[in-house]
Length: 201
Image 1 (cartoon, rainbow, N blue to C red):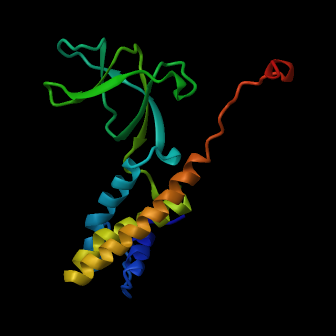
Image 2 (cartoon, helix red, strand yellow):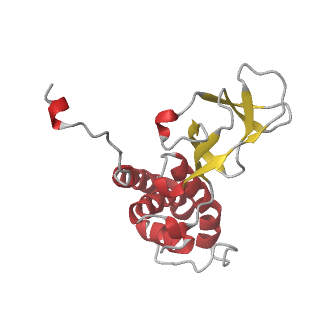
C-alpha cells in the first residue's frame, strides 16, 4: 500500500523532478520534502472532501449539545475528525434512504453544531486524516496529480510552474472522474424483489 512519501514521489515524478524524498514527517531537509510536507495534507484533505469516498466514510452516534434556542429540535457536536457530512440518520437506519434534514452552524461556545429534528442522530461522514494504506489505486493516482499541481509553482517557478500546474490539474480532472466512478461502483444497492406476475400487471 502506498505511503505519503510514495504519493509525494509520484507527484514529483509527474513534474519531471528527478529527486525523491525519503521523509516528509519530519521533512528530510530537501526543498522537495519541505514542499511535500506542506502541501500533501492540504491536497489529501481537499480530495477527501470532494466526494463521499466509501473507504473514508464512518458512522458515529452524535453527542448532544446543550445550547440556546434553535429552530431545530436538537443540536449535536461535530465529530473532531469530520471533513464532509454525508447524511444525518436515525439510530436504526441501514442506509441513506432514511436521511434527515440538517443544518450546520457555529454555537456561541465556538463549537460547530449539527442541527436536526432527529433524536439520537447518527452521522455518516467522510473523516479527515485517513491512513494512506486504505487509499484505492485510482484515488492515489488522483491525489498525486492534485499534489503535483500544488507543487508545480514552488518547485518549477514562473510561467513554467504555472503551465505545469494547469497540465496537472487537467490530468487530475480525468483521474478524479475515474476514481469517483470506481468508488460509486463499490456499493451494491438492495432492490426489492418484484414477482414476475406482479411486474406484468
